[in-house]
Image 1 (cartoon, rainbow, N blue to C red):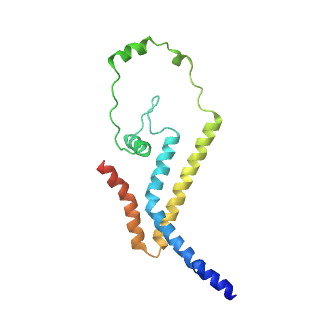
Image 2 (tube, rainbow, N blue to C red):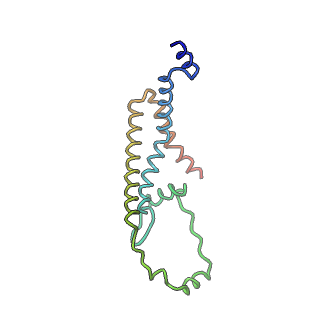
Image 3 (cartoon, one colour):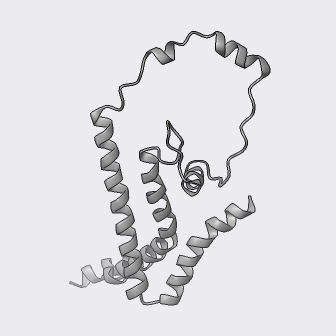
Length: 164
C-alpha cells in the first residue's frame, strides 16, 4: 500500500486533481474557439451546396457571398478580377463549342448523400458547440474569465480582419 502511494506521488499526484485541471483548460480553450467553430460550421454548411457562389439563375445574398469568401480565402471582399488580354476573346470565339455539346447529368447519388451527411455533421457540430458554450457560461465556476475568453475569441478574428 505504501509502495502504491509513493508511485502515485511520483507520477504527478492525485488523478482527480489532474482531471479537474484538464477539464478547466478544456473549458477555457473551448469557450475561446467556440465563435470560430460556429462560424466555420455554419458557413461550411452553406458551401456544401454552393450557396455562396452564383450559378445558373441563382445569385446569393451579398452577406452569404462575403461570408463564403471569408471562410475560403480569409478575406471579406474579393479582389477585382483581372481582365483577359484583348486577343483572348477572339481566340475563345474560334474554339469549338464542345463544352456545350455535353450537358452534365448532375451529381452522383453518392455525392449528394455525402453532402447531406456533412450538412448533418455541420449542424450537429454547431448544436454541440452551442450547448457546450451554454454549459460553460451558465455553470462554469469563473464566469468572468469565461465571458472574457468568449468575447476575445469572437472579437480577435474581427480585429485581425479589419487590420488587413
